[in-house]
Image 1 (cartoon, rainbow, N blue to C red):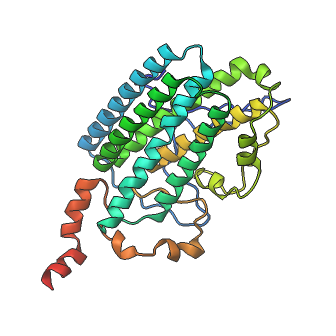
Image 2 (cartoon, rainbow, N blue to C red):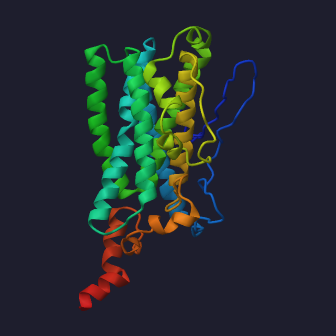
Image 3 (tube, one colour):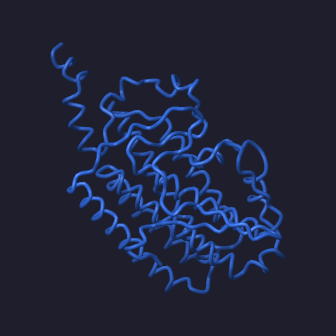
Length: 311
């Protein structure tokens, strides 16, 4: 459960076999994501009192919405862990689909083009999809009412997130941070309560393939706070699977926290030497807007628009 005084902070205790090493996933998220070079994100202007009030309102609404959903899930799934995880993972992918949908809309109208955002959000959805496949393999979707609830929640969640992201990306990213934080806390409690039993159970094949085999480019891509290749999980049993799912959720939280500073997100694979490739179509980024209202205003007032009107 969340409290309004603890706005979706995450503390991850990574339990390792034969040692009690603790790794904190950061209580307050840093404003900058990982970069390979000296480039730094532009510093935002100091917030006004109105900005602070708006942010506080947005976060309060997000915490209320998250607490409400958590209360319902607690009542329905207090003793059915895998079914609960299936529902969580079904809806966990939705925000990233919604973000990509709105970003594609912005591209279509020539308002904003940022390839890093789309790459990272796709990698996040890819990660959550594999979480979902794992829960299905464990039987979390075996009961029809669970599938019905999860799928319909995902449908309405998608519509809500698209509207929220179009109006206020900062609010949408904070809401996703809250959802991911709840997922982290849920898996963390499960691991601590069932850890010894999980160590005796085999890992699903889909988990072994995702975490240890093939091209791990997308696995590195959503972890924007760390360098590529710096995290390579071991999967020997079901305990390792849930340990890594939990740590994935902590990485999502950090990425969502970084996204709340507009224009701050950078792909872990974006090197300074290939920045020119990321700037492809830079003429579409002159307006560099935040939210659909801001995009509409800047598409009319930007120098390129005025030049077109004078032709």
